[in-house]
Structure formats: C-alpha cells, structure tokens
Image 1 (cartoon, rainbow, N blue to C red):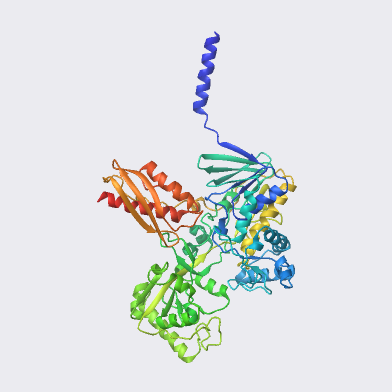
Image 2 (spheres, rainbow, N blue to C red):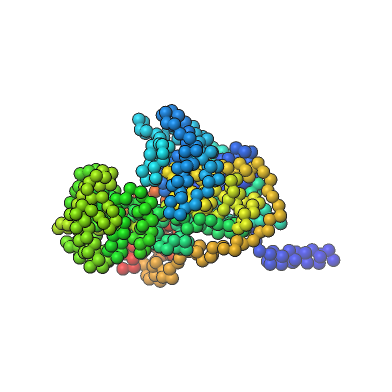
Length: 633
C-alpha cells in the first residue's frame, strides 16, 4: 500500500511539473532603478547614501550613460564653486528667470514649481560633481564658466564645459560611473529591458518584470521603482504622433530613448504632458547605414552667402537669424523636415578664409564622412535635378536672392545683406559661378521634453493628479518641466538633480495605499513600440557556399571601415570575426561580441541587433553578407 501511494505521489509530481509554467527568476532590492543614464546613476547613488543596502539598476543597452554617451555634456548651475572662484555674481532667482524665459518661446509652458526645485538643488549637485572629479577635467587656462551659443544665452556665464576623460563623452558620466562602480551596494545589470511594472494588492508599485540575456526576471523592491528611461527621440513613429513632420526627424540621441518607459508607466495610470514639445536642430546629417539616425553637422555656408531651401526649392527662413529656435521651428514645418544648403566655390573659399568652415572641412568633402549628402552640378537646373527639387522653383529662388543681394535688402525674410552682422555674415555673396553645390540636412532630435506628470518629489501622478504609490520618475521621461526648449546645461543637470530627489524621497517615506491600478485613458498605442522588420531575408541561406576564408568591409557608425573575416566550412558559417573597426568603444563591445556568435549559432545573418548599438550590429551583418556573396559565386 505504501508503495502504491508513493507511486501515485510521484506521478502527481510529474503531472504538476508538466502543467505548471516555469516561474520567472526573482531578485530583491531596496530600490529598483530602470535606466542607467544620468538620472538613473544619480538616483542609485542617492538611494545608497540614504541607507539602501541594495540598489538594482536595469539598463537595456550594453553600457551606462544613456544620452550622456551622445552629448559633450555641458552643465549649468548658479552660485557654484567655479563662479565664486572666478568672481562671477549670480543668483538662483536669475537662473530660474532665464530658464522660464527660454522655455516659454513658441507656446512652451515651463513648470515654475519644478524649475524652482531644480535650480535650488542644482548648485549643490554641481559642486558635488565638481569635487568628485569634474574640477580636474577643465583645460588648463581656459574659462570654466562660459556663455554657450548653441542655446539661448544666459544673463551671466553659468555654463560649464569640462572635457571628459578617455572612454567618455560627458564628464558627468565619468564621475557618476566612478562613484557607482565604487559602491558595492549598487548593481548595474545591462542588456536587460524592463517590460512591465509590478503592483501589489495595496495598489503600490513594488517591482519590474524585465527580460535579459537569460530570459525573464522579476525585480522587486521595498521602497519603490524609479523609472529613468529617457524620452522618445529615437522613436520616429511616436514623434510623428505629436509633430506634423516628426516621423521624418533624425534621431541623434540615445538609441534606447524609444518612449517605452512612458508607455509602461501609463499602463499603471500615469498621466502625460508636453508630448508635443520636441525641440530639434536644423543641422542633422543622416547616417549612411540607418536612415532614421543622424548627427549634428551644419555646413555654416550660409554665413558666407549660401541659402537654404526646402524640398520645393524655396527659401523658408532668414538663414542668418541669430535666434536659433526660429530657424529650428521653421525647418520643422517644411516637407519631411529637409533642407538643402546651396552654395558655390566662392562662398566656400570665403568661409574658409574667415575660419568658419570647421564642419565643412571635417565632413563635407569628397571621401569625407558626409560626402553621401553632397551634390554638385554645372548649372542651377542641373543641381535641382541632382537634389530632386523643381528646377523652375530653384532657379527663381536663386534669381530672387541674387537680386536681393544686389539691392542690399532681403524683403522676403529680412536677412541682413549689408555686412554689418559679423557673427552671421562673414561674407556677402550671390549664388553664381561655374559650379553649384548642395548639402542635404534634416531636422535632428537629440532629446524630447514630454513625458509623465510628476510632483516636486518626482512621484508619478495619474491623470487626475493622484500619486501612484511607489512609482517615481526622473530625466527625459518626465514631461512638462522645461517648456518648449531646454536652457544650456539643464539637459544634463536636470536628470541628475531630479534623480537624486526621487531616490531621497523614496528612501525617506513609506508608500501610500489604496490606489486603483488602471491603464491611462489616453495611453499610447502599443504599435508605436513594435520594431519594423523586413520580410526579406538579408541573404538566401539555401545557396551553396564554397568553403574558404572571406573578408568583407562596410562603413560603420563613425564613418570608418568595419571589416569582418568569415570562414565557411562544410557549406556552413564556421566562424565570424570582426578584425578591424572604428566604432565607439563601450557601445560597440556588445554587438562585436554577440552578433558574430549569433550568426554562427544560427547559420544565418537574420539575427537580432543589440539595443543601443543597432548601427554597429547592422554593419557587422552587412559585412558578413558581403562575405557570403563571395562564397556563393
């Protein structure tokens, strides 16, 4: 009888094992942080300082830093150590006034309360960064507090531009990384994507479901979750929902900034605000390998007489307008947010003579990184054909502009043609000569300013302004702080400051109870986060492949060659090796390690790319395809 019962128990155990799905792995911490950019790293450090024994930071890409990997990282704050040492008088009140004045242009609605919270904390945070390493990153003898012409100028010098050490783009990232790596209470887990927030029966957000290299893991916390996932500057479909030509904006920020973190918070009720606040730069050079990506690369030829036209071959703004936001907004309204700088050899020669051709000499020459967006012709009609604009329109535009130069007055857009504006009129020229040139540029988005609503403690609010217990957010995923435009240095300092505030509040307070978890009424459509996939295989693996060793090269992310070596044995891919490249260290490490291995394992080039390193991933795949084409001949 005992033997029969034992047998039945064993059978029941087997059946239970068969029908019950495998449970996800779990990990616990005091605080869970989603996103390892400036906000996330800052939040992790503040949580540890406030007594957290364990902080887990989840990062979908292969390295920390987020947007700090794509910006030189200017910072700003008022009344800093630097200003005091350099004798610059400044006040937080003046800083607040400048930020609000800049943010309310073109209908922007800056949040005075949150800006005051930021500005009143920025000085202490900047000085903290300064003492922890930033002070050693300024060029000897150079001014440390400066005016930054890439943004609206502050009323006093309060922008700081330290030089990052090797391996980093931004000085603040280097400091934050150093501090995080030295703190044994903080664990950063890369290549792990948050998919869903976890709520308990009390309506508290107490964890995150995420997917990493080894499958799904549930991360749970005692004090809450801080979402620091960035904005949506890398999601053209989402930008297209809120800007007329947004789907055409080039993404120049962090590849992981797809807006999914905002959607994830909306799934538990988060309200959103300012989603149409999507600032751009009118100087985006499109990537050779990814038509959705770009980088800043203005020609500045308009400083020496060039004009800017849209896809209709027509001027659309004063090219030398010194209020940059006016030119930015003007381009955003043009068809597909595309412009062409039209110039001649004489214009380029004058620009060089005046020392203004830095970008031209770095990118836009035959064989240069930007030669794929350069066009030339012997006539204006021929140039119109090259760039695909109506010839009659471009001819008229050039004739009208040349007549304006002769008259010394631009009645169409008010451009100064008398040579009095030295900064933006280095030379006055007509569009005439034996050779005509054009360079195609696009509106470039490096950050977005819309996102979830939050209070002064960075607690996320639902659509009726109720606090969602246990849920915090910081950085670009929080909307409605700055207005339409950010001021110099706040794009870096804002996330760092608000990340610290979120963690300090989470650690010091207990979560509320009784919240009803629900989806937001205006929740974003899930299709906005679906990856576009091609139904065509990159290479037909049914083809017979000759055994041997093959080499293939393509242009990589930074404009240099990426070369692979592929060995075919027994008609299959036996090995793939990246033998040389000029890709960005750190960002490219994961795809260089994982993509070749995936190709060999599956005997196919139709493999997944690495989040945050899509361009490098695709370059490896394309180089392998070149090898396979050789083997198939």
